[in-house]
Structures are given as C-alpha cells and as structure tokens.
Figure 1 (cartoon, rainbow, N blue to C red):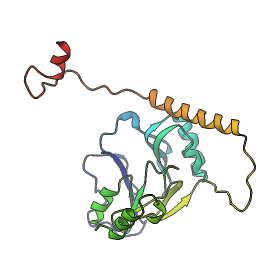
Figure 2: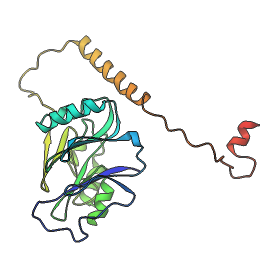
Figure 3: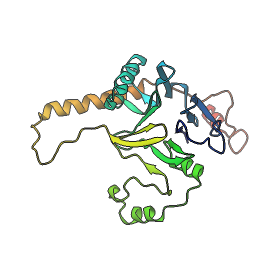
Figure 4: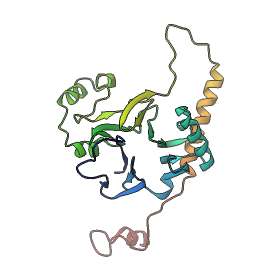
Length: 252
C-alpha cells in the first residue's frame, strides 16, 4: 500500500502537541514546513516527480504521468493563475499537488479512481490519498450511518455524499480539488458544467470518437513507455521443498 499525505497549518495557530516534526512511518519527505508533504510506501523514483520555480512554487505528481518536466512547469504556471484543469489533461493515472505560497491545491480526478481525503487536525487540515491513515491520526470511530447507506444503496454513490467509513474523514468528490490556505480548506469544482435547461450545441460524432480514441492511445502509451522494474533474479526462490522451486522446475 502507498499513499501521499500532507498537512496545512494556520500561520498563527497553536503548534500540534506532537510537534511540527511529526513524520509518518516509512515516509519520504518531499518538502517541509510550514506545509509538509510526504510520500509513503513503495513509490518508485519515476512515480514521484517534483518541479519548482522557487522554494514556495512547486508541483508534485504521484503515479504514471505522460507529461514532460517542461509540461509540468507550464501546468504549474497555469494552476498558479487558477486554471486547475491543466493539471488533469495529461495522459496517465496520477495525483497532482501544487503549492503556491501558502496555498495548496490537491487535484482529484474526474472518475474518482484516485481519491483524496481530508480531516481537521491540530488546528489545520491533514490530507491523504488513503482514508485509514487519517482515521488513525485522529483516532476516528466508525461512521455507522455511512456504512448503513453503503449497504442499503451500493449503486448510488450520491447517498454517501463526501463521507467515508470513518467519522471526521471526508472525501473530495470527483471532478473537484481540495484547496488549503493557512489550514482553512475549500473544495471547488474545476470541470465546467452545462445547464440542462439550455440545449448544448450538437457535437459531431466522428470528432468525439476520434478524441476518445486519441485519449486512450495516449494513456496506454504512457503506461507502456514507463520504466520497467523487473524483480531481482540473484536470489532464486527455493520453493516449499528444496530443489523443487520455480527456477529448478523451469530448468528441468
């Protein structure tokens, strides 16, 4: 299991009882106080990328992203002006975290396949891409109402809203971004929505099919061109019985 986790504190708020130097177990620090960000788990070097223009304007991308470093910098400049959609237009499957001064922006994807969670902690807001670490951080109890709604309406995600199985831990809805400023949070949508009361202009079917095809090809290409990480073959697997491991069976 792997996730990213960070914290945004108030500029003049109280220092957490554990101190600002708190760090998740087995975490890699990407940038430090006052708004630290960590990568936790078995992230490979090519799956965690950080670009920055100055010490307080930077972008971290977690996962498989087909953008070049220069494209990431262009996206960072666009996000600095508020254009968050530029952070979601690259091929691949990833989570983007942009920092501009004391403003942090954690962008969720449109499908909700890479969720983002947040909770109140120590006068600020903690966020992560997994709900369990945040629940453990605040010692949250189970949300029985959420679990009941999940059992009663498994095919209706709107019944759960932004809740999670843990009380006090919230999920950012798909197509939205979590924006943190000095510990205060705001969840805003970055995908424009069209009113159903006004008829949308007809879209050419061939153009739409070609656009979907191009997007799928780019997404698959980003996965196939990613570096391969083959397991080490120095230590052979002996198997449960000496002399009968996978290597010996293949040799026979």
